[in-house]
Length: 92
Image 1 (cartoon, helix red, strand yellow):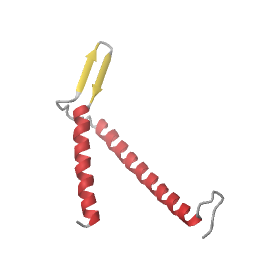
Image 2: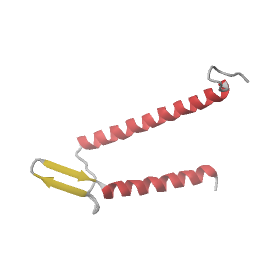
Image 3: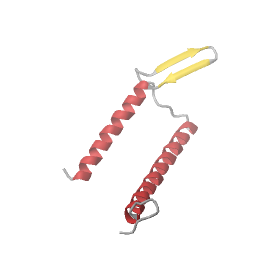
Image 4: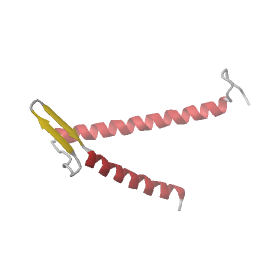
């Protein structure tokens, strides 16, 4: 086994760094896709509906929107999606 300058096996280190690189590129592509989708939807003036738990504070010269209900809904949908994907990947 070849040891690099940091005292770490080169093959192990190279494998982990390559995996991290692929992960970061994948996450970057997902972020670009989400950004493009949001940008396209804003051009068509499509907005998410305001759910009951969304908090809106409007005062003269100030508008604060806290999408708590929307965040919970998105979290639930993503949790179910990742659960279903993990079940198919594990073969159960």
